[in-house]
Amino acid sequence: MKNKVIVIVGPTGVGKTSLSIELAKMLDGEIISGDSLQVYRHLDIGTAKATIEERENIPHYLLDVREPIEKYTAFDFKEEAAMRISDIINRGKVPIIVGGTGMYIQSLLFDFQLGKNESESLQQEKRASLEKLAFEKGNEWLWDHLNQIDSKAAATIHHNNVKRVIRAIEVFENTGKSILDQQKIDFKNSDDMKYDAYIIGLTTERDLLYQRINQRVDMMMSQGLLEEAKYVHQLGSVQASQGIGYKEFFPYFDEQSSLDEAVDKVKQHSRQYAKRQMTWFRNRMNVNWWDLVTNPDSVSRLKEELEPWIKE
Image (cartoon, rainbow, N blue to C red; front, side, top):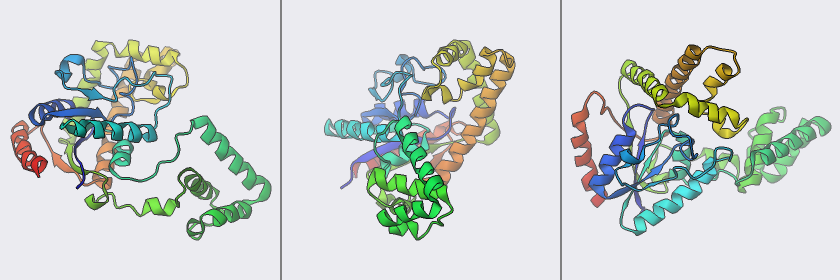
């Protein structure tokens, strides 16, 4: 019997936070953030982090667990979220995972290896070493090395495709498994899931979604997004600085663009990211889609579907 978890996914601006709170109150649940930037302390506005008031005393996890200068990976999330799920279930509560970072959600629900928790600098150092070997000893030598450790993968990759050869070597060295083993996972098949997950996807009409995203950016600006972005800019080249809502302001701070241009870029990139999120979740996961923006009354039907499922 697999442990039950509720997962709420979808782009920004469709009501994931409010739905998670509502379901947590109804089902005696606790919430785990599945967002790659909400883990960082001090980054509240640009990440659309639920405020203390919005949380309504519902326990939230994996918020504010790293300093903005630190790295945070899908490997970190998988390990920490799994521990939280076990703890929540052991206390008789319902875990509710909420977020839009697809790889994080997928890595948690499906038991596939992501690789060791190595620093990015170490990963880059290893990759550079393999690239150097290919240059000095030839592509075939590097392919032979892959063939010795993972002949299955080597049989499917041409020796001149150095990038894929290196990636296959990295996966095997980090996980002890062939890259082909991970490609066999059917992410649409619930039988392959580590948990019995009810995945709720929130969406709405594209024009309305884009309008809500634009309005949200304007609201963030009134809440102090510019000051938060300035703080991130001062941190230098860190992982958090790549987040949408921060990096777009850097040219403005460097006197290379106007503030209006920066805000427009935030809106544009947020809309593009929302589109990519929708495509990713539709193609990679078996999601129950709901539009609670134009059909708010349908939340009662969603609750009716969840209650018998949670009691099974």
